[in-house]
Image (tube, rainbow, N blue to C red; front, side, top):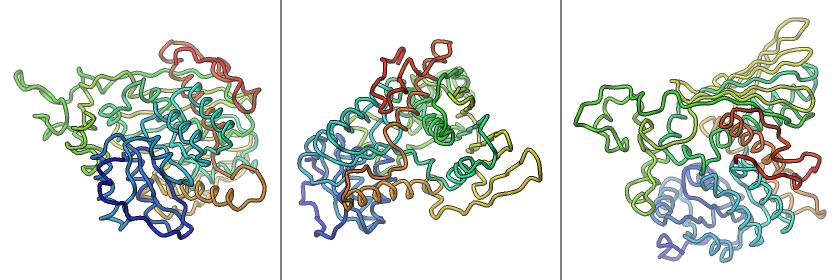
Length: 445
């Protein structure tokens, strides 16, 4: 156990609350799930595991001060937490390349319910490791695809499923993400740690495509991507001969004039200099000078078994954030975008256009209201499983199969642009096996 619990943790009495453990005390672990658990009366954050004890102590103080949360037990050893705490569930929020290891560890230590923040793993092979551990342990895994819980995305799913635009033909998404430039400042910029941004970021969008197109499996992926703007020869200000740029925003001599200056995303409490001194990780490496092997823009095309085609564009070099959707069926077209999440435009092939109103989310600041709904689905599934007299799986909004499908498309896109070819999904996984356990080994992944 870490120094963060040198004093005895304040334990809540047995009140029927679900005891949740979190692996990873970064932005998603604390600023998302930690804060959300602090607001609930049916679950509590019982323990956190992270190798960085300084960061965990900052997290504990922040949650206590901001939300009055009882102090959680803090561990620098994941296995110690899993063995030492009686947990109803574990949420995995570590960097992507560790997702499979930590999910498997939780399942093998007898944790029945595991939520893995997307992606499930960085490769199909990693996803299948989780699947096998789940099957062997009898546990259950949900993947944290929060976009499924956005009211706009969920309403579009209903319209498609109802047949209001006929059989699907085309799906297009164009994503512009102003904050995406900070990927080049953080661990996400490394292919080995994130699986590449088609996996880390694109898995959100590929899952939406797969979810909307319930009648088909992804067959083939083509992609083109590149690093056009966030590189050393594109620094957007004049550099003086004897005054170097960077290496971090906080120490850069040009931070007052750099238009891409960005402090650590996780906030000063979790990613301050004291925490960085423990593990050497900083969140504000210069986006232009940082070593990187991922892209800042790209387009991926996905072909499906039911004659549907999907296109996903992502651009991290822009001054706004939005996703623009066009969904075409044989009898009509849907158009919507996330910056205006309360309406969908329906253009029938024959007849008059109409606007479909979408009720706004309750907490728009939490990923458009999606994160609280995602956590609610996970906790409701746990409670239903505990009270069920049958052995049926809890109703989670996204399963390991969904996780495999999204990663398979993302990994195929990474291979496609790096090797300059189209990639058949069957190179990575065999969909004839409904569990996904008939996968072949990945090439280039």
